[in-house]
Length: 266
Image 1 (spheres, rainbow, N blue to C red):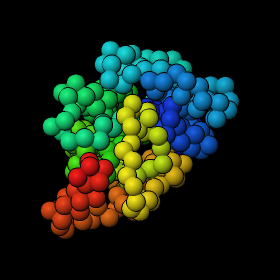
Image 2 (cartoon, rainbow, N blue to C red):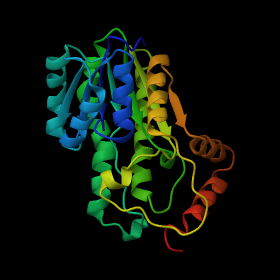
Image 3 (cartoon, rainbow, N blue to C red):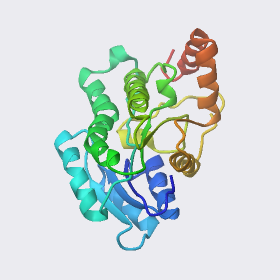
Image 4 (spheres, helix red, strand yellow):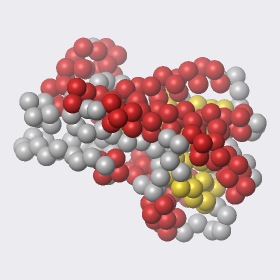
């Protein structure tokens, strides 16, 4: 897909990877409707973008609010005239505790944003994408959707659901104008803990994990839209776990579990 001149909706556009995706799409000549729960975050994205009038619109919406999401297509089309792509980047993590120590309400919150939010936006915008001669639907899963991460069980379940939903959409839409992409980021240098309202545990000693810069992750996601790539792994950690989960699934699970012991106070 030629990015220039197209209109893209990006959830999570007020911070982290989502913000970098917005900025990269604008750099490549697209129009963007940035969606986020944080009005302040969206304002900062707009400040950083300094986009010409009409190129960027911001929409303060909770993607877990089905009614609000169902009103979004009309708002975006009013601002930009059409929709050529939807990029679901918004997501939150949970507290770093075992599933047994999470309340049902905490699990529901993670599922509401990560899975239901992705489903709501997909359902809302898919008819408009199908009406375009060429369009794109991209959902961000996670490395945690490939291999279970103790202490992030609800998060991993939500991202595993996004993975399978997107793979099903790929199968159902492969003979249509909609190109479907699923993205698996590894560790990316964003403030996802703060944006999720949780604290990252402090671990003494050990090695500092290698993280991908948010702008690099944003570029890879926009590259995937441009090329129509179905499956994207961001970071050497995601690529390694993807390979290991295929050839030695039990080893992949125990490897991650051993690395998480310190975080869980074991």
